[in-house]
Image (cartoon, rainbow, N blue to C red; front, side, top):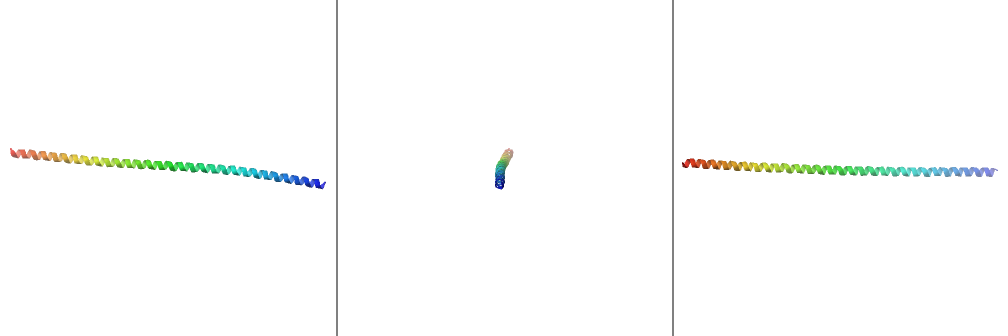
Length: 109
C-alpha cells in the first residue's frame, strides 16, 4: 500500500511539474508575442520619424526654392530699375541735346 501511495504521490508530483512547465511555455509564448508587438511598434515609430524627417527635408527644400525665387525677383527688379535709370539718363541727354540745338539755332538767328 505504501508503494502505491508513494507512486501516486510521484505521479501527482510529475503532473504538477508538467503543468508548471506548460505554464512556463505559455508564459514564454506570451512574452514572445509581447516582444514581437513591441518590435512592430518601434518599427512603426521609426517609419513615422523617417516620414517626418522626409517631410521636413521637403519643406526646407521648398523654402530654399522660395528664397531663391525671391532673390531672382529682387535681382530682376534691380535690373529693371537700372534699365529705367539708363532710359531716364538717355532721355535727359536727348532733352539736353535738343536744348543745345535750340540754343544754337537761336544764336544763328
